[in-house]
Length: 309
Image 1 (tube, rainbow, N blue to C red):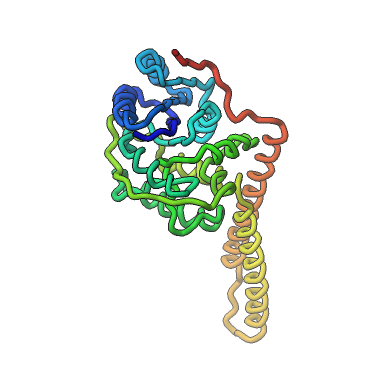
Image 2: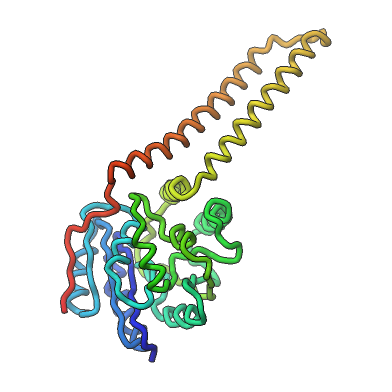
């Protein structure tokens, strides 16, 4: 039996069909640990998830339910749960049983070898192809934006040392991204191969558009790399327009087949107009986030907490 206390933090959104089975799986898996706590954070689900969480708290004395006043997003819900945690190690996982609580022992054992964080690397993902492609793209971009190690997969299923969690919860901004904060705190990371299971019931809450918007939010909140990319693209566009100008100027005096040029003019106006608007939009995203941070936009607001001892 493992002696350390384990905190399990799970953000919940519209998963009423999974929660009772999830609680049973956690109770069964945590028998090998001396002590544990289960923290379920309801991110203002539109189904009966909060009602079931309260039922779980009445059945499992080690469970705590946190109900947020509105939907703040997965990472804000995680932050609320992390601040409630008290274990020597904190497990973060999803609510749909695609992450098996039975694998917590494997994550714990691997991390105890001297690491601060252990991520689950899934041997085969039970999800749509576009999500696998998105995960791959997210990983590649994270290497540039967040200085993620190339050999580490930023899995939503992980175990984190309490000392790292204590630093993560100090994040003051209104747009938290837990993995980016972890990468900014420690480089002592590892991973272990874990099975990825089919969703217990229902369907996922993230479609392609939502996933893309979440990534943009994270990218603009933790890195200025996109601004640098826009600067380079702007410089290259200006350089291209200069050479095009020289080319058309020479052609005007050397060629007898002169094109009126309105098509070229329209194409250039559309291209550079689009670049300007995109650049302004990106800059506006940064300015808007700074404005919201300065004005103290809430990370989350707790409406109710249930903890039956």
